[in-house]
Length: 290
Length: 337
Image (tube, rainbow over all chains, first blue to last red; front, side, top):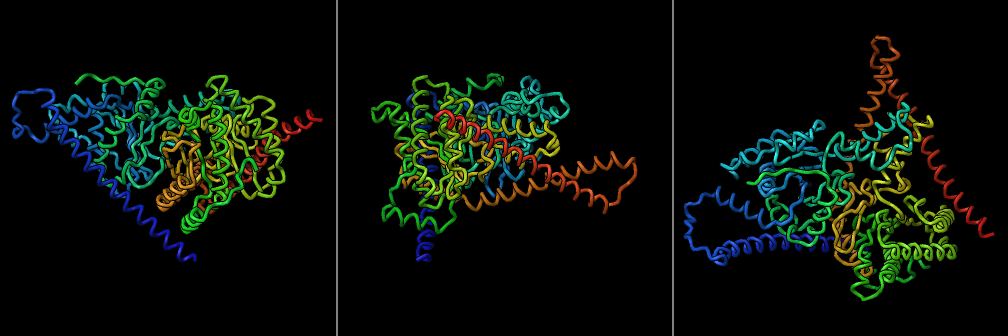
């Protein structure tokens, strides 16, 4: 009897894998088809008469135009978008591509996280890829989008606001639980040295201490890439109200995140989350118009 | 029993349960029971009725969990943020809680038969005094039971819980039970309200929201998160099975991530111990170099004494918590005399 149940269990799981793969394939192709239709019909609908010599527009320009179009269709943008990569094999080019797209669309704070610390250890490689993709994707406009790479504790708030339009932060599990533990150690040391009493320890104090060392704004939205349905240690303190985009598909290719962000922006969930986030988030990012 | 439905599974449900149990099953499931108010709107009933139906659904879900071999369940019943809702709604929820905990106290025999241990996690001092006493009585009455565990988060938020754990460690330091260098991830976990439970394997949120809403943020770092669009009062056995299936699909990767994290924790602790010993030897040594054998011996001594300190501190903390509940509970007893 047990063997029968085991066989039935394996069959059930196989069925599920097939279903997920089909849904993923379907979603990507439906999106591409919709995009193509919109691209064709929108100029007609708007009554544009100027003949467009599509043949002469370079691939780079069309990608730039697409980024801008994406930005305009996304009415509400997250202030801080987290990219949580749980895939076994990490494709730096795909991640860089996505980060640059986020910047071009107008998201001012993008964090990249994986639980093994691969991005943290290969920070410079990611930086190079992002700069390369920035050049390729944005070309002449790339100077308008400056990127500040933050990798550890010495971030300066003023520097971020004055000189940068977008901040890219590489995160690892050390920024999560370990940061909370370090703040706890600090508070306990203060009590040990009689500089603080128990009454001085509360949520507000702990929160300010965490922001003092690593000024990471609470993520409004997290996009998860990979088969694992978990945050895998991503900023536990900060994700109190974060919308965690559930696996829309078994995302084998990170570039399909565009689909996620566009569909999230259009969704009711995003509206609620972003209105709430704007109200509660105290961080201001300055973006000059492109 | 009012808190756990007595209904048995149908043939098809039993068959599905047996198939699922052929794979890895979660031992501890957490629920964010969202959607009571939306259900009330949909069904054109009062909000209070929605919450009441929500409780009935909880009783049913606990029965399904037991049938699936899930012996620990944590539920998010009332957030500290919920105090901001209308007075009418908050009073209604407090009254519902009073009814349910009072009812629970009349079912001692059943609770003992099923071996149900009820724990309530949160800042109980924020609740009305009579409700605090009812809760304390329920917790004390079921403390010794160990067949299944129900953790009810009431007047709870995760950030508050973490801050409270930090405060407990600071209390330990103030009392001279531990040193600030003993503070670690493992120790913080032991100081949370949920210290007597393992971390949840699976967290389920209903009603389509995809947020954690300040629930078990620390404990669910490596849990499988399943967001389902069904409203809580409409939750079904099949919804639960779907969530368990998702857990099973993520199981291997989650195990790997957890193992990696545990290794990292152990390394971190080792580094911390080594650095403490180095500092200790520097203070003692007066510039003399210590050979590696003595250093190793010092390290082992230090680890043993740190573990002893921590053990004493955790015993003292448990005693403090037990005393809080037994004092509250005996106050109630005196009132009823």
